[in-house]
Length: 391
Image 1: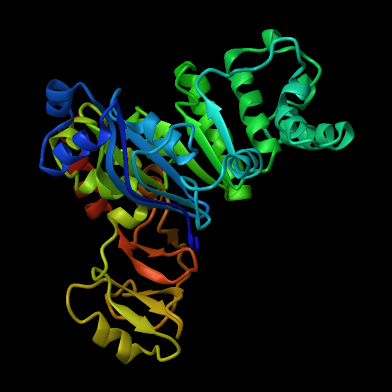
Image 2: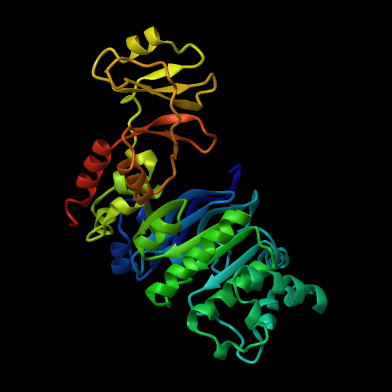
C-alpha cells in the first residue's frame, strides 16, 4: 500500500437554504439535532477527514441516518459539498469541471448499489458490458472484457441469460461484474450485499475477497453490518450524526472502542472470531537463540530457568527451528524443525495448530520475520476475555 488513493479533508454537507448558518452553529458546538430544531437545515456530513490507501477495502459503517451514504455521494460528487475537499489521486473532485467529472466516473470510479439496477431486457453479458458501451468501447472488445469478468465472478455459463432468470445473489454478481468491467481504480459499494439472504451475502463477500487478493483495487464499502465490516474491511470508519467517531482496523476497534456508540455495535457478537495470531501472541514468552552459535553449553545457559524451549533465529530474524531439553532433562543442542504461524492467521486456525503442538509456536510477519509466539495458555486467556460475555 503506497500513497493515499482518496483524501477527504474537512468535508461538510448541509441540506437547506442557509448552510453557512448551520456550519457556524456546528462550529460553536451545536449538534445535528439542535441545528435542525432551530433552523430546519439538515446536517448530512460534518467535518469529516480521512484517507483511503491504495489497495485497501475501507468500510464506512454506521446506523441509518449516520451520514455514510451522503459521504460517498460527496466523494463521487453526486452531491455537491458545502465545504471541504475530496482528492482522488491528488485531483480535487469538488473543483473539476463537469466534463472531467463524467470521464472520471466512467473510467476511474465504479459504483455498486444495493438495488442491482440491471436492465431486464438485456442479457447478463450485455449488462456487464454496459459501462464499456457508455464509454464508447467497440462491441467485440467490450464483450471480451465483460466475459473475462463474468468468468471471474463465476457467471460465464449464464452470459446469454436475462436477469429475471437468475437468483438475487447471481444478479448482484452481474452488478459487480459491470462495475469491474471498466477496470476502475476505485470502487464504491453502497450496501451492495444487504438485500441478499445471509448465505448469499457471505458468498458475495467471499467473491469480493477472492477478487481483491488478485486485483488489489481500492474499495470504499458502505455497510451497517458490523460482521460484514469485520470480515471484509482492511480498516473501518464508524459514523454517527454525520461525523466519523472512530477509524481503525477491525482488531483496533474491537480492542479499543472509542465510545459507547461503537461498543453497542458489538453487543451479542463473539468478537474473538476476528482475532488473528498477531492479537494472541506474546513477544517475550520464549527465549531466543541465534544460529549458528548453538552448542550444549549455550542451550543450557538459555534454558537455565523454567524455560523448556528456545527458538533459533538466523541473522535476519527468520526461524530456523527450536531447541529444548532431552528426555533426561538436559539441554540439547539439536535444532528441531517447527512450523510457523503467519501473523494474519485467523483465530480458529491458530487454536487448531496450538492444540496439536507440544511447544509454543512462533508467529512471523508477511516477510517471514519473527514477531512473537503463541501457546495454549495465552490463547485460552484471550478466548475467555473475548467470549466471556457472549457464551
